[in-house]
Length: 315
Image 1: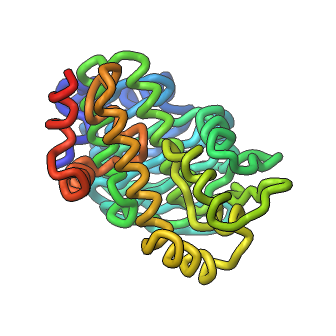
Image 2: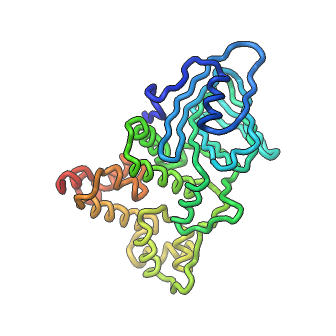
Image 3: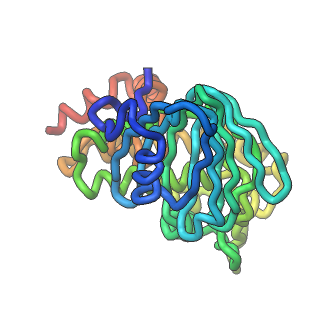
């Protein structure tokens, strides 16, 4: 079971809701809360800082409305663990349930109403982290800033993302080195840009590039540590999606995604043989494998042994 912050990260338990709100204002983002006029709800919060990210798990213990003018320099990724949340932003109302993700843009006014049984996990991400990830992926950074589409996203559809968050929480509670923290936060930013709809133009045709399979192969080799999408490969090859699949079938007998996955596995295999490789997890995450169980099985099928066995042999 994936744990998103354990009791080791608890700041308040069964506390006054306004005390929890004050803590949120100091560490997570400026906001105001409105609670029922009667009763004394028991609120709780767990919190960790991890590189430039803030991770927190909050429950107010009563129906609560949270409002804010705008977050300005940060994005809020909220995962509903229990209960429900009603979001009213720019005249559009959405209802979120357990296992769904809400992403708040920096310039979005915040108007959220949580049910009494609602518990949520929040990641605070600075704007610069998403912008740097966009530029590192060689995608076009929108002049007005990156905006994610207002929509409900099921966590189950974001392959491996929950496991990634579990690893981050574990590393946060075990004082991971700054280098490791930086690696994880970049992966989170890359995954959000790759998996969620936004105004980022992910297709960047290269000027003077001749197209064809060789151009695509070179592009893949240069970007194995990044999330490579079909649209990018279409732009580099200068063909339609159907023609791209035909091109890969003729050249390597694999689909584009399978070929990229195979090359990532082969790169990981080579990296694990270097004495500088500090851990299997770090090398795997650095190449976009966030579901470590599936990664290990794919690696074993490809190379006849587990990645940990390769790593240990060269230590």
